Length: 116
Image (cartoon, rainbow, N blue to C red; front, side, top):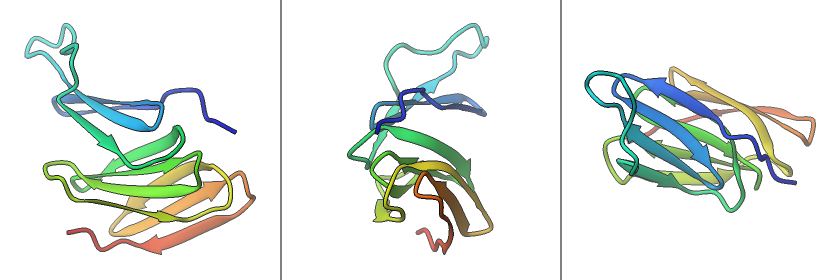
């Protein structure tokens, strides 16, 4: 089952939007009247749609329809993913190095993240 609704988050000078299995970062124009049409960066790592993501401490943590959680460092190419659930990840959050997630498989999990 795919999560078809996009997720977005505004942070400083960028708008982050999930589109299918990617998260795209668009630079906001200085006068805040819009954003660039081409993404500044694209974060990939899921085999199915990104259901939710959160920005935390210079990273994007995302949960996808494939049951994976992906962790991307915003200003580098560092990323990794791991299988967290048997079904799509419907919610995810991260604070102080702890990732929590909830899934359609009726489980909630927590993980210790030690990003680079």
